Image (cartoon, rainbow, N blue to C red; front, side, top):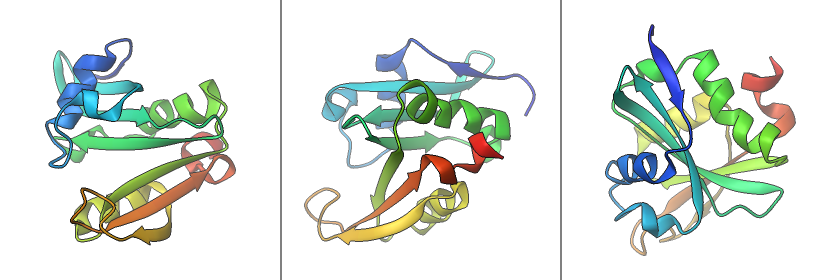
Length: 143
């Protein structure tokens, strides 16, 4: 998609944009300490990734998008460069609702592997499916 750009150094605005699109997140403050990368077409945000719960070797990613058209190889390289290259993580994790088939297809399409089910782990009511990706498995950087 022509005219796409990554948005850096606007963590709170991107975090709020992403939070409004995830039903079980109230606001960006719910993530605690976080970093975020947005994707915009012109001045309009169309997608974003929030990185939180960093443990040095691992961090969580939360995705949201208004359209799948942001998902290009270049944008994905930017999204995965932050945890793997800049932060030096050996893995990244994603959790989503067990019943959210669309999100699960997207996550699996990115190359994440299902690692488990956390019963009532999403919001105290819904089961969460946990996914992980190791640096050497990230085809967006290594392919």
